[in-house]
Length: 292
Image (cartoon, rainbow, N blue to C red; front, side):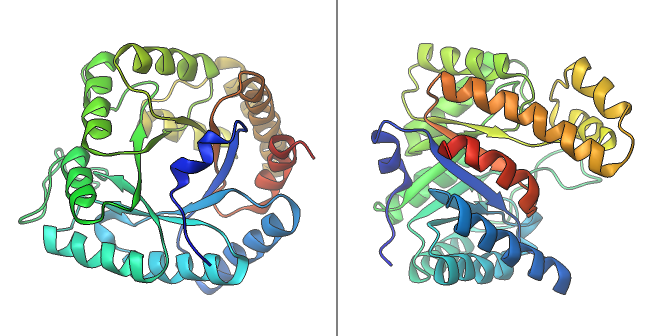
């Protein structure tokens, strides 16, 4: 199957639909990702899928392995993630060659999060400190590769202001990024404000809205701490009153459904679902996105 630049999909005039998987660490996790992928393929096949890259490259082999399975078994267009964290220039070249040889035509280029217990980002020896540096490096050595990068509607936790963070995003776009996938958000006003500010800053690449169907009160409060995301009080209250895990998941899906409906009405270029390898939330929303 011939791979293509994901950026080309955004010129078709329809909202592009994608989901994110993560490499499993257990046998049951392996079965779960494959079950979820099959259900998605059988119902409303995503336009592409991404697969994450563990902190410091801790899952790099599984990123390639399961990316290949998602591509070969289910025919998905697969975009693996790659981080500056833990990778030298030669490591990045090696991984990009592997991605190319595995038939991946796109990469999600990220700096990577600061590891737990550390207070600042430390690049690998002969590595990069910022995502824009790695993007420029990839664009130079793999000019045909589609490159995605991350955007933060509520600003990156390390950025002083949203405007300063958008300046950093502009550097990534100028270095060669083809499209932007946002950090998760639970209030669409943050996304719309972010898009307007990006346009004003001269960023004209597609900005894909990323949605996470919440699973529990504890989960969203953890994300609030980790990602500096604002959690609407109405969502917090509903999750706090949930009777059990199933009720919490249903509340999270309904909140995400309302977000997706508003985003579709606004004709956003793309919607990316963080599904945590779970089929239920993805299936509940993909039919809405696909108009099924």
